[in-house]
Amino acid sequence: MWTFFTLLLSISGLFASSAEAQQLDQPDLIIESFPVGHEPNRLTSDGDNIWVTNFGDSTVTKLRASDGAVLGTFGVGLHPVWLTFDGANIWVGNNTGDSSGLFGNTVTKLRASDGVELGTFYAGNAPTGIAWDGANIWVASFYDGTVRKLRGSDGEELGIFNVGPEPQAVFFDGTYIWVALWASNSVVKLRPSDGTLLARVDVGAGPVDLAYDGVKMWVTNSFDNTVTAFRASDGEVQGTFGVAASPWGIAFDGANVWITAPETNRVTKLRTRNGVNRGSLAVGNWPIGILYDGTSIWVANFNSNTVTKITRTPR
Image (tube, rainbow, N blue to C red; front, side):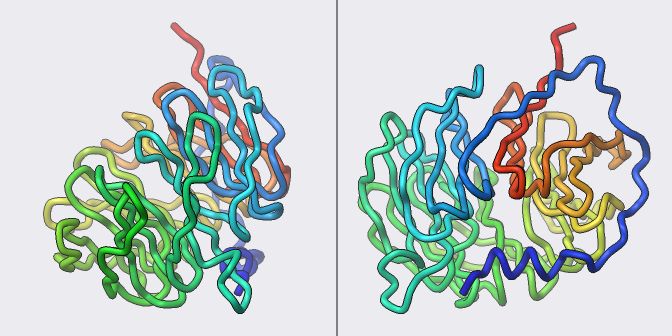
């Protein structure tokens, strides 16, 4: 039942590192590192603070974005992975449960202002990706091949929708819900009002994470060392671009996508206009999650127990 850990083992050592175009120029970058909990995984922002799940000690850490100061560490369910912010609260998917389902297979709702737990709700067998659509929480169930829709106000289950085997990331683009399907090498598009499946897009092997640049969806393909960009309006593939071995997390900064590569301990930057590789940058050990908060790129380094903050100096 250690779904996330199993996935990491499945990609480890399968690929030799792919060639990088170049190293990112660093003189205009400020790179900082901050300690968090054990085995940090995914990140979200509440506007002022960064929240990171600590898979190994079943907590989330809240960091002040301006200086990385730890503002609190809060217990959640067993082995948290993905998390999201609904405008007032942090929702955390607890990936692993015991036979009773008491500690895992749930999502935990924390008040963002002080970390107080407001509720814990069943979320299927091994919750993975999670997203907020403005009114409801959508959470994928890895072993069920479904996504659940939970009402944001009280966590009531509003629907369960079949999507396909082994869903990973869930992403809301402002209009539609998108789900990456790790085992079927595809991404599906759902209508949020009723969960109707509107489209299925074939991508690379082992899709994990998703980002949106306003026109195109971007997906990391963990098994073939690529990212795929496709037009959100009709699913037409716009390009597939080679990156470092086993790409995992992805984030959009307004002009580029940044991709984590656990095998190489680096992040790669691609220009979204044309997919040109703009180079890579060393971060911590085994980078997984990545986030852009409007100012800086944040990276969760699973084996370093740190997060890296990358900020461009003002010109």
